[in-house]
Length: 212
Image (tube, rainbow, N blue to C red; front, side, top):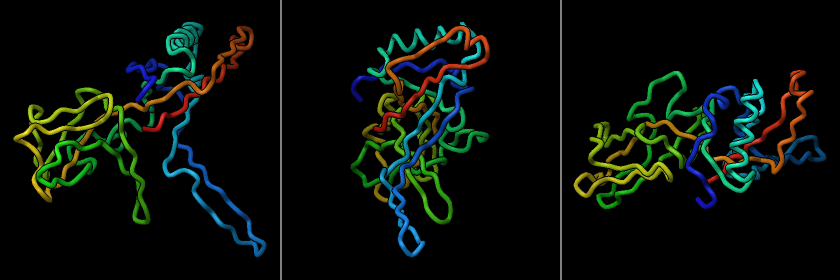
């Protein structure tokens, strides 16, 4: 991923940030009263507003300093989604059985981390490209793989098995992990009015997900 800094937006501020997934759907109203719907995007794109996490002048300065270091919209960075940052549900501990990431063929050594959302009717799989280093656990057919038998690139989310630990044909590969969202600032300008801020009106600081 070009133009990206492997640093995280201040965690203390992100915990109070608002936002979540966005999907674009074209809806055409037909003359008979029915409608036709078509998804414009294959995947959802997360959108956040970091302004809701700013509570003091010190917080605001920290965001401004971070904004300057990223050159505004130029460089992406990591962001911890306060609602969705684990391979499983937010209240559950990470386990090796949380997500299916592939099936062995006896030759492939690399598998990409992913998270699937869904129910009985349908599902959607999201590529996870920014796992948190040291949090990734992996299993083959339900048996936990020792950390010495695989590596995970925290900058890409690719799990690579050592030569002697490559999953055999038909074996299920699963993983658990914590992750960040790759984002960039959604504006080239942060406008601050001190009088308005002191009156309780916080600035809007949009963040947009960078899709892998």
